[in-house]
Length: 246
Ligand code: IPE
Ligand code: IPE
Ligand code: MG
Image (cartoon, rainbow, N blue to C red; front, top):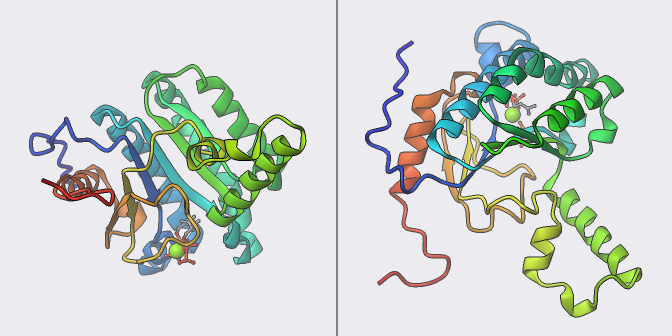
Protein backbone atom coordinates (compact mmCIF):
# COMPACT_ATOMS: atom_id res chain seq x y z
CA UNK A 1 0.00 0.00 0.00
CA UNK A 2 1.21 3.49 -0.81
CA UNK A 3 2.26 5.32 2.33
CA UNK A 4 2.48 9.06 2.26
CA UNK A 5 5.71 9.74 4.08
CA UNK A 6 5.79 13.29 2.78
CA UNK A 7 5.56 15.84 5.51
CA UNK A 8 5.93 18.96 3.32
CA UNK A 9 2.37 19.95 4.08
CA UNK A 10 2.82 19.63 7.85
CA UNK A 11 3.91 22.65 9.84
CA UNK A 12 6.94 21.23 11.61
CA UNK A 13 6.86 24.17 14.01
CA UNK A 14 3.42 23.15 15.23
CA UNK A 15 3.76 19.44 15.89
CA UNK A 16 1.75 18.33 18.96
CA UNK A 17 4.13 17.67 21.86
CA UNK A 18 1.99 14.84 23.23
CA UNK A 19 -0.39 12.68 21.22
CA UNK A 20 -2.68 10.19 22.98
CA UNK A 21 -4.28 7.34 21.03
CA UNK A 22 -7.35 5.30 21.84
CA UNK A 23 -6.42 2.30 19.72
CA UNK A 24 -9.83 0.97 18.79
CA UNK A 25 -11.28 -1.34 16.16
CA UNK A 26 -9.03 -4.39 16.32
CA UNK A 27 -11.95 -6.76 16.85
CA UNK A 28 -14.02 -5.33 13.98
CA UNK A 29 -10.97 -5.38 11.70
CA UNK A 30 -10.56 -9.11 12.36
CA UNK A 31 -14.29 -9.83 12.08
CA UNK A 32 -14.36 -8.24 8.62
CA UNK A 33 -11.74 -10.81 7.63
CA UNK A 34 -13.61 -13.66 9.33
CA UNK A 35 -10.71 -14.03 11.73
CA UNK A 36 -10.73 -14.23 15.55
CA UNK A 37 -10.60 -10.92 17.44
CA UNK A 38 -7.13 -11.83 18.70
CA UNK A 39 -5.78 -11.61 15.16
CA UNK A 40 -6.86 -7.97 15.13
CA UNK A 41 -4.93 -7.33 18.35
CA UNK A 42 -1.88 -9.00 16.86
CA UNK A 43 -2.05 -6.80 13.75
CA UNK A 44 -2.74 -3.73 15.87
CA UNK A 45 0.64 -3.96 17.56
CA UNK A 46 2.32 -3.27 14.20
CA UNK A 47 0.50 0.05 14.07
CA UNK A 48 2.04 1.07 17.41
CA UNK A 49 5.52 0.49 16.03
CA UNK A 50 4.77 2.38 12.80
CA UNK A 51 3.29 5.38 14.59
CA UNK A 52 5.95 5.51 17.31
CA UNK A 53 8.73 5.66 14.73
CA UNK A 54 6.91 8.29 12.70
CA UNK A 55 5.98 10.40 15.73
CA UNK A 56 9.60 10.24 16.85
CA UNK A 57 10.75 11.31 13.39
CA UNK A 58 8.35 14.27 13.47
CA UNK A 59 9.68 15.42 16.85
CA UNK A 60 6.65 14.48 18.93
CA UNK A 61 7.84 14.37 22.56
CA UNK A 62 5.32 11.93 24.00
CA UNK A 63 2.89 9.35 22.65
CA UNK A 64 0.51 7.57 25.00
CA UNK A 65 -1.44 4.55 23.78
CA UNK A 66 -4.47 3.00 25.46
CA UNK A 67 -3.67 -0.70 25.38
CA UNK A 68 -5.98 -2.17 28.03
CA UNK A 69 -8.60 -0.45 30.16
CA UNK A 70 -9.68 -1.38 33.67
CA UNK A 71 -13.06 -2.18 32.03
CA UNK A 72 -11.52 -4.55 29.46
CA UNK A 73 -11.49 -7.30 32.13
CA UNK A 74 -15.16 -7.73 31.19
CA UNK A 75 -14.02 -9.50 28.02
CA UNK A 76 -13.67 -13.27 27.57
CA UNK A 77 -10.76 -14.65 29.58
CA UNK A 78 -9.15 -16.02 26.41
CA UNK A 79 -9.06 -12.55 24.80
CA UNK A 80 -7.67 -10.96 27.96
CA UNK A 81 -4.99 -13.66 28.19
CA UNK A 82 -4.05 -13.06 24.58
CA UNK A 83 -3.75 -9.30 25.07
CA UNK A 84 -1.49 -9.92 28.09
CA UNK A 85 0.87 -11.87 25.82
CA UNK A 86 1.18 -9.00 23.34
CA UNK A 87 3.86 -7.00 25.20
CA UNK A 88 6.25 -9.95 24.75
CA UNK A 89 5.44 -10.20 21.07
CA UNK A 90 5.79 -6.44 20.64
CA UNK A 91 9.07 -5.99 22.49
CA UNK A 92 10.64 -9.19 21.07
CA UNK A 93 10.03 -7.81 17.60
CA UNK A 94 10.54 -4.09 18.03
CA UNK A 95 12.44 -3.16 21.21
CA UNK A 96 15.82 -3.25 19.47
CA UNK A 97 14.61 -0.89 16.76
CA UNK A 98 12.93 1.42 19.29
CA UNK A 99 16.17 1.56 21.28
CA UNK A 100 18.11 2.38 18.11
CA UNK A 101 15.68 5.23 17.57
CA UNK A 102 16.20 6.54 21.12
CA UNK A 103 12.59 5.86 22.16
CA UNK A 104 11.87 5.67 25.89
CA UNK A 105 9.24 3.16 27.05
CA UNK A 106 6.96 3.75 30.03
CA UNK A 107 3.67 2.41 31.31
CA UNK A 108 0.82 3.75 33.39
CA UNK A 109 -1.77 1.54 35.07
CA UNK A 110 -2.06 -1.48 37.30
CA UNK A 111 0.77 -3.60 35.97
CA UNK A 112 0.63 -5.64 39.19
CA UNK A 113 -2.62 -7.19 37.92
CA UNK A 114 -0.87 -8.67 34.87
CA UNK A 115 0.81 -12.10 34.82
CA UNK A 116 4.40 -12.15 36.06
CA UNK A 117 5.90 -12.72 32.62
CA UNK A 118 4.06 -9.73 31.16
CA UNK A 119 5.22 -7.58 34.08
CA UNK A 120 8.83 -8.66 33.58
CA UNK A 121 8.76 -7.92 29.85
CA UNK A 122 7.37 -4.43 30.37
CA UNK A 123 9.58 -3.47 33.32
CA UNK A 124 12.60 -4.73 31.38
CA UNK A 125 11.71 -2.55 28.36
CA UNK A 126 11.23 0.43 30.70
CA UNK A 127 14.59 -0.17 32.39
CA UNK A 128 16.45 -0.67 29.13
CA UNK A 129 15.17 2.58 27.64
CA UNK A 130 15.07 4.82 30.71
CA UNK A 131 18.06 6.89 29.55
CA UNK A 132 16.71 7.41 26.02
CA UNK A 133 15.91 10.99 25.11
CA UNK A 134 13.66 10.60 22.06
CA UNK A 135 9.91 9.98 21.99
CA UNK A 136 8.45 8.84 25.32
CA UNK A 137 6.10 5.99 24.41
CA UNK A 138 3.75 5.27 27.31
CA UNK A 139 1.48 2.23 27.40
CA UNK A 140 -1.73 2.74 29.35
CA UNK A 141 -2.09 -0.86 30.43
CA UNK A 142 -4.76 -1.93 32.90
CA UNK A 143 -5.45 1.78 33.08
CA UNK A 144 -8.54 3.78 33.98
CA UNK A 145 -8.79 7.56 34.10
CA UNK A 146 -11.08 7.62 37.14
CA UNK A 147 -8.88 5.11 38.91
CA UNK A 148 -5.83 7.28 38.22
CA UNK A 149 -7.55 10.27 39.83
CA UNK A 150 -8.50 8.18 42.87
CA UNK A 151 -4.98 6.70 43.17
CA UNK A 152 -3.45 10.17 42.89
CA UNK A 153 -5.80 11.52 45.54
CA UNK A 154 -4.77 8.70 47.89
CA UNK A 155 -1.08 9.36 47.21
CA UNK A 156 -1.53 13.04 48.03
CA UNK A 157 -3.54 12.23 51.20
CA UNK A 158 -0.70 9.99 52.30
CA UNK A 159 1.82 12.83 51.87
CA UNK A 160 -0.46 15.18 53.80
CA UNK A 161 -0.89 12.62 56.57
CA UNK A 162 2.90 12.21 56.81
CA UNK A 163 3.33 15.95 57.10
CA UNK A 164 5.21 16.20 53.78
CA UNK A 165 2.80 18.80 52.39
CA UNK A 166 0.32 21.40 53.66
CA UNK A 167 -3.29 21.52 52.54
CA UNK A 168 -2.58 24.67 50.52
CA UNK A 169 0.17 22.86 48.58
CA UNK A 170 -2.57 20.90 46.82
CA UNK A 171 -3.09 23.01 43.72
CA UNK A 172 -4.09 22.01 40.18
CA UNK A 173 -0.42 22.10 39.15
CA UNK A 174 0.59 19.95 42.10
CA UNK A 175 -2.19 17.43 41.45
CA UNK A 176 -1.18 17.23 37.79
CA UNK A 177 2.44 16.53 38.70
CA UNK A 178 1.35 13.69 40.98
CA UNK A 179 -0.58 11.91 38.21
CA UNK A 180 0.93 8.83 36.53
CA UNK A 181 1.78 11.10 33.58
CA UNK A 182 3.26 13.72 35.94
CA UNK A 183 6.33 14.83 34.00
CA UNK A 184 4.92 14.47 30.48
CA UNK A 185 3.88 17.52 28.46
CA UNK A 186 0.12 18.23 28.36
CA UNK A 187 -1.78 16.16 25.78
CA UNK A 188 -2.22 18.37 22.70
CA UNK A 189 -3.98 15.87 20.49
CA UNK A 190 -6.18 12.85 21.26
CA UNK A 191 -6.92 10.50 18.38
CA UNK A 192 -9.48 7.69 18.57
CA UNK A 193 -9.68 5.24 15.71
CA UNK A 194 -12.63 3.14 14.50
CA UNK A 195 -15.36 5.77 14.46
CA UNK A 196 -16.31 5.61 18.14
CA UNK A 197 -16.89 8.98 19.80
CA UNK A 198 -16.16 8.55 23.48
CA UNK A 199 -13.27 8.57 25.95
CA UNK A 200 -13.92 5.17 27.53
CA UNK A 201 -12.21 6.28 30.75
CA UNK A 202 -8.93 7.43 29.13
CA UNK A 203 -6.77 10.23 30.60
CA UNK A 204 -9.73 12.12 32.03
CA UNK A 205 -7.70 14.84 33.72
CA UNK A 206 -5.07 15.15 30.98
CA UNK A 207 -7.52 15.61 28.11
CA UNK A 208 -9.07 18.77 29.56
CA UNK A 209 -7.73 21.00 26.76
CA UNK A 210 -6.59 18.45 24.19
CA UNK A 211 -7.87 18.66 20.63
CA UNK A 212 -9.92 15.57 19.72
CA UNK A 213 -9.76 13.87 16.32
CA UNK A 214 -12.04 10.89 15.74
CA UNK A 215 -10.98 8.81 12.77
CA UNK A 216 -12.98 6.05 11.07
CA UNK A 217 -9.95 3.89 10.27
CA UNK A 218 -9.80 0.63 12.21
CA UNK A 219 -6.61 0.53 14.29
CA UNK A 220 -4.68 -2.16 12.32
CA UNK A 221 -5.16 -0.02 9.17
CA UNK A 222 -4.07 3.23 10.82
CA UNK A 223 -0.74 4.30 9.30
CA UNK A 224 1.62 7.25 8.84
CA UNK A 225 -0.67 8.86 6.27
CA UNK A 226 -3.56 8.77 8.77
CA UNK A 227 -1.32 10.24 11.45
CA UNK A 228 -0.35 13.07 9.12
CA UNK A 229 -4.00 13.66 8.30
CA UNK A 230 -4.87 13.91 12.01
CA UNK A 231 -1.96 16.26 12.69
CA UNK A 232 -3.06 18.42 9.74
CA UNK A 233 -6.55 18.64 11.28
CA UNK A 234 -4.94 19.58 14.61
CA UNK A 235 -2.88 22.28 12.89
CA UNK A 236 -6.06 23.72 11.41
CA UNK A 237 -7.66 24.11 14.83
CA UNK A 238 -7.70 27.34 16.79
CA UNK A 239 -6.81 26.64 20.42
CA UNK A 240 -8.15 29.26 22.80
CA UNK A 241 -7.81 27.73 26.29
CA UNK A 242 -10.73 29.81 27.40
CA UNK A 243 -9.34 33.08 26.12
CA UNK A 244 -10.20 35.18 23.10
CA UNK A 245 -7.89 35.23 20.09
CA UNK A 246 -7.00 38.68 18.82
C1 IPE B 1 -9.10 -2.08 20.76
O1 IPE B 1 -9.82 -2.86 19.87
C2 IPE B 1 -8.15 -2.89 21.60
C3 IPE B 1 -8.55 -3.03 23.01
C4 IPE B 1 -9.58 -2.47 23.59
C5 IPE B 1 -7.74 -3.91 23.83
P1 IPE B 1 -11.16 -3.58 20.30
O2 IPE B 1 -10.83 -4.94 20.80
O3 IPE B 1 -11.94 -2.74 21.23
O4 IPE B 1 -11.89 -3.69 18.89
P2 IPE B 1 -13.43 -3.49 18.60
O5 IPE B 1 -13.81 -2.15 19.17
O6 IPE B 1 -14.14 -4.62 19.27
O7 IPE B 1 -13.52 -3.53 17.12
C1 IPE C 1 -11.12 1.55 24.88
O1 IPE C 1 -11.67 0.76 23.89
C2 IPE C 1 -10.00 0.83 25.56
C3 IPE C 1 -8.80 0.64 24.77
C4 IPE C 1 -8.60 1.07 23.56
C5 IPE C 1 -7.75 -0.08 25.44
P1 IPE C 1 -12.94 -0.16 24.17
O2 IPE C 1 -13.24 -0.83 22.86
O3 IPE C 1 -12.70 -1.02 25.33
O4 IPE C 1 -14.05 0.92 24.55
P2 IPE C 1 -15.64 0.82 24.52
O5 IPE C 1 -16.01 -0.44 25.24
O6 IPE C 1 -16.04 0.76 23.07
O7 IPE C 1 -16.09 2.07 25.18
MG1 MG D 1 -13.35 -1.33 20.98
